Length: 270
Image (cartoon, rainbow, N blue to C red; front, side):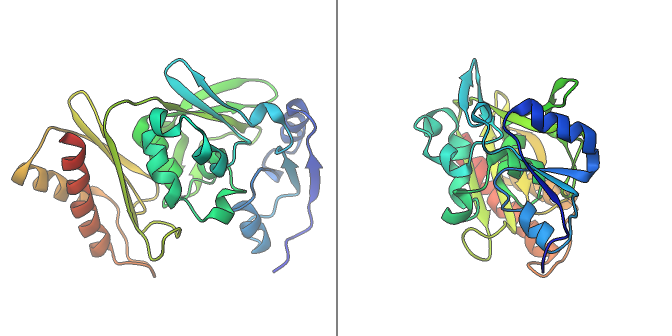
């Protein structure tokens, strides 16, 4: 299909993008990598009157370490983060998840913040942001604000971003403790049927699950093993709003959560 007609604005500076976004509001969309947005526009699932291109703004294309966090700008492509020299040392969980994020071709165009903005419940990067307790940096012409990932995602492909706001960056806490990632998909690079991320905490482990509910689900568990761990994974799996679809049954997804979750928790707690 062909997209509905729209105006295209190539922003030369950030203030220009914010000014257009402030005027157009919900009728405008920010485009960076466009790997998800353009498909939706072509299928007329999205019909913006204005596209604002921010990929030519150097201030948004930076990966910066600030204190105990890694700040990734809105113009940073997924491939650029994957190739960042400090990734494995500073963001081990992202290093594990990024190779599962789409394919080489889509990672070369798609952006980290674009995946967060799209908020697909099966996507890997929103899952990583939730598991690590990261933040989303929002900016409009009038204000800046930071929001915890758990408060940013509001449902399937829904967020709490205002119509006049763009995601300026996301920040991931630097976690030196053990972590793990596993995913089951029809093919490598497809959206996950179930993806699990685990991070060691002071009291046990945090487990995040994607691909099952309308947004990534996160739960903290104490140091468990044996039947206690099996019971905890069974309870977590049934608390998720798993549903049948063309890719898998709800029962299959719950079984995957139990099995992958148990293995990841044991791996991280070793």
